[in-house]
Image 1 (tube, rainbow, N blue to C red):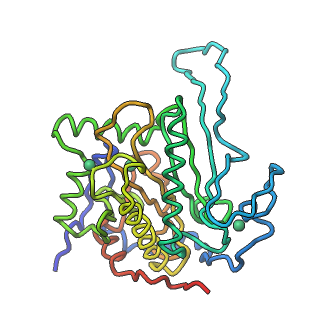
Image 2 (image 1 turned 135 degrees about the vertical axis):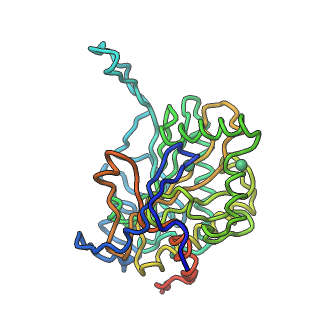
Length: 348
Ligand SMILES: [Zn+2]
Ligand SMILES: [Zn+2]
Ligand SMILES: [Zn+2]
């Protein structure tokens, strides 16, 4: 049977207003590039060298409390600070432009056990993480000059994560960063043009088509988006129209914990490795304006391509022209659907 989408084509990303080149015929090409190390979970529940483990001293000299649940703190080496002096030097040209940038950057430990990951935590352990993200969004977004709260996680050395301890980051900024700013504009335009929400419309279309859906529960849908750039990229989207974490009901928070557990488990099982990724939530800006256009979702951007050690690089044409992928989103969704939701590496 002839496969759909076997020839090169480009696909439109309506959320980011950009194109991705899809080249399915290239998946046959031989690989002679870098082969990395398979990532295994840490063997110890407490690592005396880890600056995130309970009771340990951090590089800045502060000692972590002996926490037994969630623990968050302001990043000792924050990329942004609450105070940023005005820029006094007059630029040589209007093309050499700068603005002060303020923000608060925090670290959120998900669990005291150093050896765990979201994939190997239980739904009951992930739910308090969802609650903590919600609290941080409210608290940081409530600061009068904070316009955006970016919650994210870099998982694995391949993504540059410096520490395997289960944790994520929250960078809140006095401006809306470029990615959510572009998505704000796209969603606003779609609402004005169609009178409906962009992602509500998209979810409806994907549920009808089915071929890119990985799984769904009562409250969330996980799919490889039509426009995915990364091989096993996933969009996790709430089934109900809502803009941000605080609007989730208790049941929906459980639904999010369930979806995170199931997705990260499938990821780990795909190549039987601790699957690296950058994930993060996109939600309403906290710029004190109404955002009826915003639809809450999470992006998962994993770098792995064909095994636990072979990754995709964004180089060459992708840096200079546009993003490109080989395996189709339909094939990626099919492979993730085939993965078990029982983790290959059970907890002791
Ligand atoms: Zn640790
Ligand atoms: Zn919506
Ligand atoms: Zn987004």
